[in-house]
Amino acid sequence: MFIATRVAGLEALDEFLPHAGSAYARDRNHDLGASRRAVSGLSPYLRHRLVTEREVVGAVLERHTLGAAEKFVQEVFWRTYWKGWLEQNPEVWRRYRRDVDRVADEGVPAGYDEAVAGRTGIDAMDAWVRELVDTGYLHNHARMWFASIWIFTLGLPWHLGADFFLRHLLDGDAASNTLSWRWVAGLQTAGKTYLATAENISRFTDGRFSPAGLATTARALDEEPLPPRTPVEPADVVGAPRSRVGLLLHDEDLEPESLLAERPGLVARVTATAVVADPGARSPREASAAVVSFTREAVDDAARRTPDSDGRPARTLPDAGSDTVVDWATSEGLDTVLSPYAPVGPAQERLATVRRALSAEGIDLVTVRRRWDGEAWPSASRGFFPFRGRIPELVRQL
Image 1 (tube, rainbow, N blue to C red):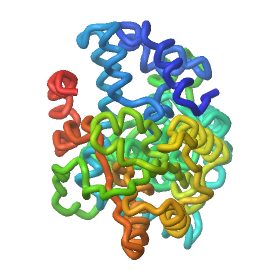
Image 2: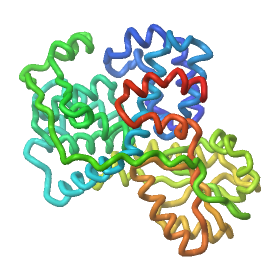
Image 3: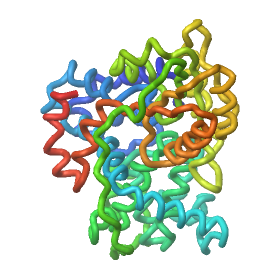
């Protein structure tokens, strides 16, 4: 259903543009099944930055006023907000990873295997499991219903549901996925939960589902207090490139042209290019075949679009290991590896390991953060509503 190329993402954007105004605001909460007529379907492209947030919002606002397209623009900024919030609260990600790793060692609780196999006996849940596994996608409203039923009706740990999503969603990223599940569970906004009801599900699926036996109450989960937030670092470029620079793309950001256009002084120094990804790092239980395939296709597409100084396509590295990156850098005679900044999540963890390995060989790793993130993330220090109030200003700036 989703073709993992930049061209396909731009075509999907162009097809959606007429519907990004009042039609989206009216219909966006309706899950009509596989047709997905009410939503854009752009999230897998935004997640890998095959298409950027700036491009999407810019194209929409060439066609509609901000007032008319407010709901859609806010949805794009939700992903930015989640990333900025997690960037300032990385302990949330670390705790989630520890909890998932612990289950991998100790075994899953009763009811988990039936749930992920689509055998709960709740027709909507079982259908959503099949849709997720088959397509790598679920409507956002269905994701909320799914998470609520998982936590409050089935009584399963939220982090295992989040892990199931992250392994199967083509658009799954550390921030949006983890924090959305926490919001349903009453952790993200402390004490505020989301309760799925048969009436709401029936209304917004046009009567396709009306599940019986759902929980009628949703008691918020609790957790140990989080440490004080870490403000977003002000520097957009961490480190200073030297003479022979190699560009290393990763699956968090596969659109180098606009990234480097923000830093034109860096372009001339790039003599070699490579692309790397590790979708399996999403979970100790491994990513789905659909996620792996989409990511590999996206990486191959980025490699074709990113020639080096001699016009050669970027090298697609066979794996994301530090030794592999070091071998590429040394074979190209590099003294600096330039890479898009990776937000909190598996890619950031991987780059930290790569940085140490490169440093041992006398090679610097320099990361570049997009202006979109640098401008927006500091405003994600509290809830979304204060952040939402800044969206018109951010749109003007960006």
